[in-house]
Length: 222
Ligand code: E4P
Image 1 (cartoon, rainbow, N blue to C red):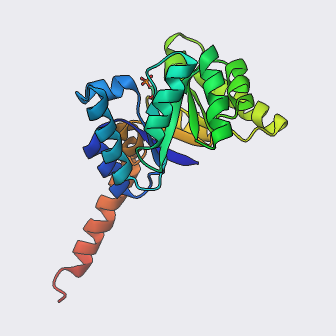
Image 2: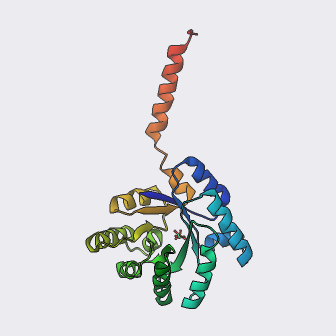
Image 3: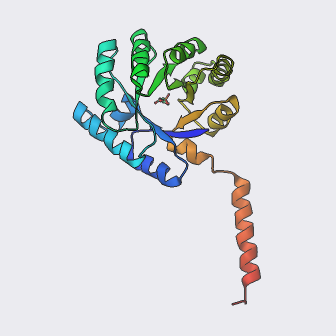
């Protein structure tokens, strides 16, 4: 399973990259706005900076247009920013047309805002490189986000679809572990959720004991 970080914060992307387990980055317009990045020129420069930190690893850059022509124009410009850009396209009618267009051009895509297995089938049929079901946002509505990951994984396996499942809207470490068990190919999560996987009280207690025993045994010895 691959680990992507879901942020536009350069310091956090660098920290995750230095941690040594990072496989890619996802952003969205809300995450860009959170970092105060506005205006096409600044947005493009920011994507270039992200792509440089994680050279060679996929970086999802989302289009703002909602019509086919606009998505194609925007996506083609984004694709030219760096070799590792993936065009992120919303799950709407013109988005499906754009996914198919970019598939034929050999430009990688990530179909975002996926909330049903039917939508995931359409994205795969259109040739999306990745499909992003939003686990957390489904859970927020009291439906079961993880069940959707299981269903898509089963459908893609039965049908032989090559689109990768990118479990998104991850809120905690349990989401990551459950998505891994459900058969996702990728999880994209905030740095806090990735780092949260480190924590277990028995690790802390065990390490403290090992170090204390070592100190005791070493006392008086040079
Ligand atoms: C995925 O690509 C999205 O950017 C993201 O996971 C959305 O997560 P949220 O529901 O926490 O905003």
